[in-house]
Image 1 (cartoon, one colour):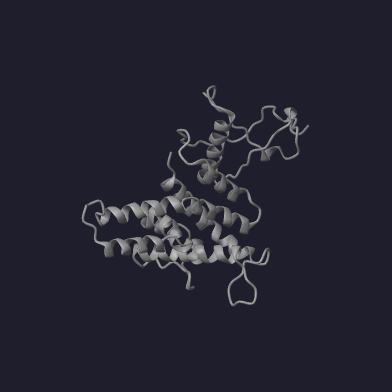
Image 2: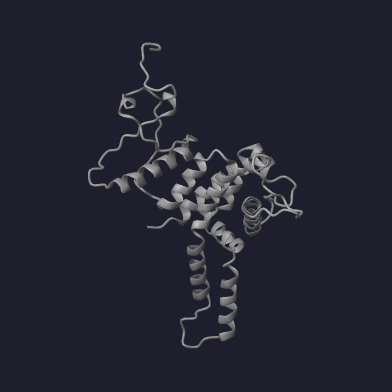
Length: 254
């Protein structure tokens, strides 16, 4: 007993219950999808990171806690990238967290490549009977160039990121300016035009992604060594959280 209240677990303050209404016609899988998106919204809007756990029956007595409100109108995002994003929030390793954020971006590579191809095809009016074969070859080469991981990343960012909103977000915190816009080769220069800002943002994300996933010894490159480089990778997580959520919002389709 403590303060007249009996708790069934020593870390009771780490648990939160969600009550759902009108779920009679939903399957267990559909409820899981709904809950995962709710947890994502709570993480983004309230900076509270929760994961789903199974509780013993004795731990399900009513408790007291703060009330948090979100505007929720049902599932709005694709389920698989939501799982990647939630995994990034829950990972205790900054390197694994970064890679999970990156998987959200990577999930939409093929779709963005397809939209880019359709756009190129329509711009050059290849539906007509008379085809300029040199132009067609050039267009196909442009499309082929976007199939690389680096260019695919840039396409996803270009499709998803509003540069004006990105600038507002960066300027909202002096630490963001210091971390992401300082004088390094991969810093983001906010005085540049939108295309160059997107390009530099892509370079920065790709740089850290490769330093984690493709570390090679005996080379003069930054290597994200476990534990030793966690402080550097950790600085990138706020940016990756912002970027991956914007991508999820802009690229999700049903």
